[in-house]
Structures are given as C-alpha cells and as structure tokens.
Length: 383
Image (cartoon, rainbow, N blue to C red; front, side):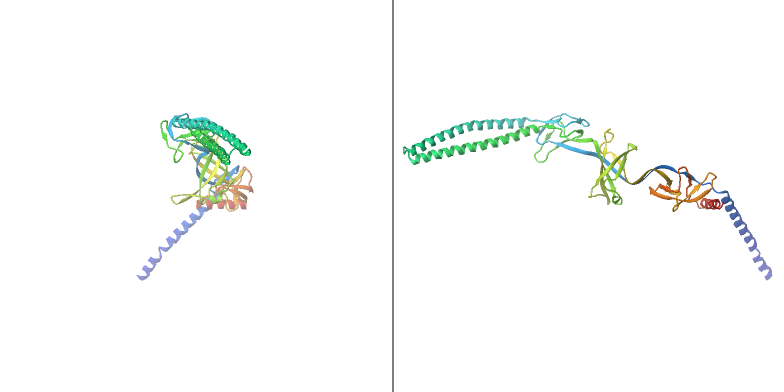
C-alpha cells in the first residue's frame, strides 16, 4: 500500500514536464518564425531642411520710442484737437488750455515794462542835468567863483542820478525776464506734438481742469509705431544662454505662421520676481512698417543659439549612439556610422554617412518588435 502511494505521488510530474517543453518550444518557434519573417520597419527618408537650437520665451510688444505729452501750466482744457489712433507730425497742435489768466499776466507785465521804459527817459534827462551842473561847478571852482561845498553837492547829485538810472535799468531787465516767462506760459497753453508718431492714448478730457503746480499732468501719449520693441521675459535657467547681438525671431498670437526677425539688443540686469519666479527682460527691436504690430500684443520669442540651414537632417529617434539603420530598396537594413552636427532635440544635422533620399529605420520602444528588427538586421548583415 505504501509503494502504491509513492508511485501515485511521482507520476503527475511527467505530464508537467512535457507541457513545459511543448510551451517553450512553441514560444521559440514563434519568435524564430516572427524574426525570420522580420517585423515591418518604420522608416523615414533623409531630406534637407533647417535646424535651429532655440531658447524660447514669452514677450510683450511696446513702442520703441514714445513720449507722454504733459501740460506745463494749470487751467481748464479748452479743446483737444486729436483722437486716439491719429497720426501726427512734430509741431501739430494737440490741445489748448484756457489762456485767459496768462493773457492778463502778459498784458500786465508789458504795461509795467512800458512804464519803466518811460521812467528811464526821465532818469537819463536827470543824469544829463547832473552832468551839466557838475561841469559848471567844476569850472567855477577852477576860477575860484564857487565854493568847494557847491562842487561836492553837484558831484553827489551826478552820482545819485547815475545810480538811479542803473537801478531802473536793472528793474527793466527783471521785468523783461518776467515778461518772457509770462509769454512762455501763455505759449504753453497751446500744446504741440513733440515728435512724429501716433496718438496711442488720451488721458485728459475736454473741460477738465489741470493742476500743474506739483507735477505735469499727462494729457496723452504719442508713440512711434514704425519700430516696435519686444520685451521678452527669460527664465533664470536660460538667461545665461543668450547674449547681445544674437539672432532672434518671434510670432504673435494672431499670426503664428509669420516669423519676424531681429537682433537682441541687451538683457536688463535687474530681474522681475513674480511668485518666486525670477525672469530677466531681454529687449530687441522689430520693424513695423506695415503696422501689423500693436502695443501690448503677446509674442512667442525664440533666441537662436545655433542654426544650420538647408542641411541633411536625420530624426533623433533614428540615431543610436553614432549609428543608424539604413534600409535598402530590398527592405534589408544595415548599420552605418554617421557624423552629426547641430541638434534641436528633433533632428540631427548630418555631416557625413548619409545621402539625401536614404531611408533610415526609426528606433522602436516595443521590446518584441525591437527583437524582431534586430534579428532581421543581423541576418541582413550576414547575407
């Protein structure tokens, strides 16, 4: 009974071994069959194109040159002669402030100046009289026909007349200076364009009273929109990769397919910190002759670190080390060494090893397909 039990326990092992052998053989046959047939390779043709190594950033468009037009005198805005978006030339009349007070001041100062100019004629006459009296007393004293005291009084009168004339001349100069200031203030009541450009904003309104005692209130802004400035914010991780003079281009949200090029002018050394994110402003100019760019537009900016134009390109996914699998017209693949240049994480520049029109296999991440491709490639090399 014990022998029967022992035999019964050992017998089931044999079918399990047979099953394992059958499964292993079937798997080996399947893999060999699949590898011998060769899984289809995903290939791509070698073509020419551009490769650029870029640093990207987001920027804002602003006028490269603008001026805030302010009022230098206080008063009520009487008339505004322009509107937002209007193109103006230097010297065009923009606005007028009520000039009543300043006209009155100019008139009063002019009247004062006329009064002083009339007084100076009287002072000149008195000076001539004092000179004559002094000359007479001097002649009489020489002939001993007058006293020394009379001569001294005539001399003092002459000196007094001369001093009064000089004092009045100084007053006239002071009044003339005041008149020029009053006339300037009267001129400031009419505000003219300081440059050629476009009125991009108007802050004041007709009838508004301006107070220019402490600071000059801003009436409007005039900007030269023919040349725009792009203010790109570059992260602290990328700012060391850019430098003045490097090539840069950008696109706008409204026209993402059009690239506008420029040259980086400079990077501001003081960063802007927002929510613990450190960003540096990089600025460059862009031509806006056609007027398509407007202030405060958002720009997607690309700084060109390196570039290779119209060169042979191979996808990064086809390169392993310094080798690629070149697939012939018969579908067989063979390894080939290549030399690469500039890369942008999508393509490599091909310096040697490939020709335009060659087809290369893309590296697959599927283990089963990769094993089949390696087997097929190895057989192709042996043949």
